[in-house]
Image 1 (spheres, rainbow, N blue to C red):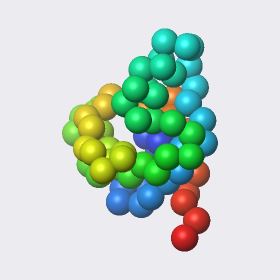
Image 2: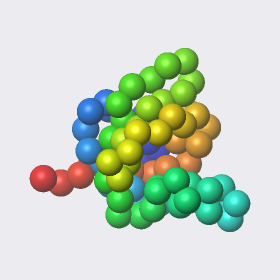
Image 3: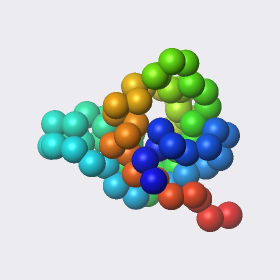
Length: 74
């Protein structure tokens, strides 16, 4: 499922990044890579705060739609 549809405060594993090479590269630079754990913290209008690699990032809904995740198995 796209990350923007995920529940808050639950760990997810990134399975894929959709988009062209430029978008995928930009997301990889921010730490969004396959297998990485990510968590949605909050939402304000169409922007989200996410936690990835022990860092908090503000990111738009349009970019989060390109991050495909699955619920992390405990």
